[in-house]
Length: 134
Image (cartoon, rainbow, N blue to C red; front, side):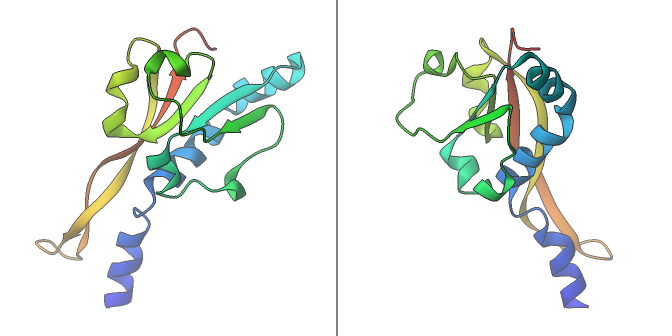
C-alpha cells in the first residue's frame, strides 16, 4: 500500500523536467515550422528548473538549441531566447517580454486527509514564450 502512495506522489517531484517535456510536447508545430524555415528555437533553462529535473536526456535535436548560462540575471538579457523553462515563482519578472504558456505542479507534501492518500500540490515549473515568438 505504501508503495502505491509513494509512486502516485513521486511523479510530481521534478517540475523542471515536467515543464521541459511540456515545452517539447506542446510546441511541436512551432518546431516543425522552424525546422522547415531553417531557424532555431532558443531555450534558456534556469538553474531552478535544471535542479528539478531538466537533463540533457530530454533535449531534442534541431531546431532546438539550449542554454543553461547562469550569468544571465536581468530580464532584458533573456530577450534573444524564444522560450524559458524556470520555476513558476520566477516567471513574473519576465512578464514584459514573455508569456506563460504552461505550468506544471510540484509536490509540497502528502495529503493523508483523503483516501487514497495523494500528493499536496502547488504550481511548480513554468514554460514561457517570448511575446513576439510564434
